[in-house]
Structures are given as structure tokens and as C-alpha cells.
Length: 188
Image 1 (cartoon, rainbow, N blue to C red):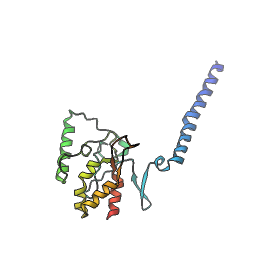
Image 2: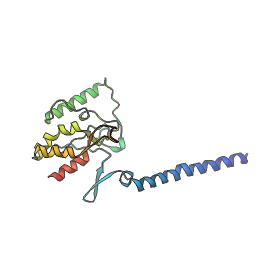
Image 3: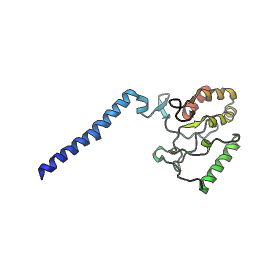
Image 4: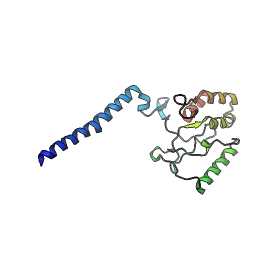
């Protein structure tokens, strides 16, 4: 019986070492060598301190900044340890009431109609770092007014930070909220 178990255990240990240790370490090493920023979380630094990641959304809520899309990560918005969607369907009264309240809040902040969908709908992860060009454009007047900047200067900043479709046809043009807010601070 030992003659049957020994090869099985040897193969189990060898495959565990190969697929559980060697392969992940090799892929991590290759990723760090070829894409160092991405492999380390696409961290964004300012004055030597890490202030966020360009891949994970943050909650900017003051009128001085571009607002991200709503987060569905539980009671704490943009909590990366609780990444999830809301799981509320189109017939949910809770979802309808939240969206209506968000639309009303945006209209009172000076955003005109129509309100872009990503301004009131959460993403699948609840951590989306980007907004649509329409949503960024709808916030220009509010930010220019609060910061006492020319509207055209803020509009130009949005134009400079539009990311094109990946490979020219995947996804939609978008604006990274953290990156444009950092550029906005540099503008002043």
C-alpha cells in the first residue's frame, strides 16, 4: 500500500510547490519587472506620502473637487475591504429613493439636467475610480465657481485628463477622479 501512496504524496507536494509557490512567485516577479507601478497597486504619491491609488476610488465630497460615482461598499463609502455592489434591482424602492435623493442633491448643487447615469448609479465593485466625461463636464461650473477659477480653465483640465478607449475600442472615454483632483489642486 505504501508503494501506491508514496508516488501520490510526492506528486501532491511537487505540484503544490510548483503551482502554489513557484508559479505565483515567478508571475509576481515578471509583473514587478515589466509593470512596476501596476504590480504595486498603482499608488499615487504627493510630497513623499502615499495618498491613494489610481485604481481604487476615493470619496471626494466637498464642492471644491470632482465627485466620484456613488459607492455601494456599505456604511463607509469607498471601503476597499468591503468591495461589492448594492445588489438592489430595478424594482427596489430603496434604490429608487436613493437615486431620486442623489438626483435632487446634484440638481441643488447646480448640475443641470439630464444627470449622467454614473452620477447616481454605483459600480459593480463600489470602488470605481473613474467617471464619464459627461459627469466630469457637468461638474465644471460648480468647481469653477467654488474655486473662483475661469470656467474654461476647469474645462481645459477635464479635456486634458480624458482617458481614451482602451485599444481604441474597449470601454468608454473616462476621467480618473483622483488624478484630476490632484491636477485641480495644482491649478491653484
